[in-house]
Length: 418
Image (cartoon, rainbow, N blue to C red; front, side, top):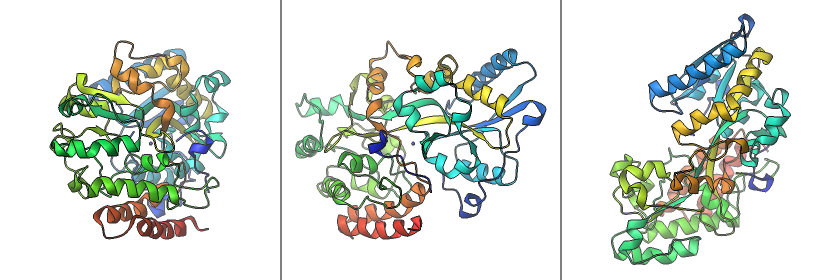
């Protein structure tokens, strides 16, 4: 079993991966079917840059530069949809038709560990020392860096300046108590204190887990052998969240549904603060000038959710050529185009400040050290699958927070086989 990455080991995923089926998960140790033998490196990626033409131009430009510097090596970058990518990748690997390299996020790494050539085997020492702690630790499983980080992101607390002006408040919440104290005043003026999406299809990394971490808890024990979200910290986090729902301080409809963002109270300017949307999400609705970036809320700790995008080499690839390509892409001068076009941040200290004239993004970047990518554990997504419905049941009042978490713990622990 892969050991989870926990806050106590130094860290705390862009889109949440679809669960790998039991069948394909069992054959992930298969080899890549990439074109290493004929000097071609094949890489699969996904639309980090959502504009199709801009995405193509970025990768085509990198490929041209790399091929000029590496005679005889050809690189083929293929962009696939985010949806169902785990199933497609696992199936390709199992059939020996996988790529040489692939874009992954941290909580995918344990699933594919058996098919990955650890980045430690080809990452230069100068690159390793250049990575931020957040970036490097987020791709490290069982003491090995499995992939090459190329970008980072953060979901800090963001608040709507207009809402605070409407209640005559100039201070923004820094902890749970602050937000709870503001909630009745906000409600009296027709505003919600926050938003919470309890739809079971939403990733807990972005919804409940930040509260769990802030309470001092975690999903798994240090050795990965136990799920621990039902301890005192977990009960405290879910009880706090239930207070917000029961008090009408967050939209109760969102506990069971996920409408389009433009249809939510957040987009309509009726939410004071949220940790579930980024500034880029709300800017079209709030206006850039009304977004206030705050560190993640704090109870015992100030922790939020962030992610790291990384490139992993698969077994069967030409390790020299593929390693050269991945190291090239990961250089700050290469990855900056991807980061800036998509609104993300460098994974290396040498990447510097990509947005010197953008106070909003600079403020988000400052919160990166407080971010957690979620547990790096091979059962992490399956555990979310049994925990999310129990959290929803507690918020709907059909179970107490303690009973809901205990019931989820029993089901989740059985998955670990310990």
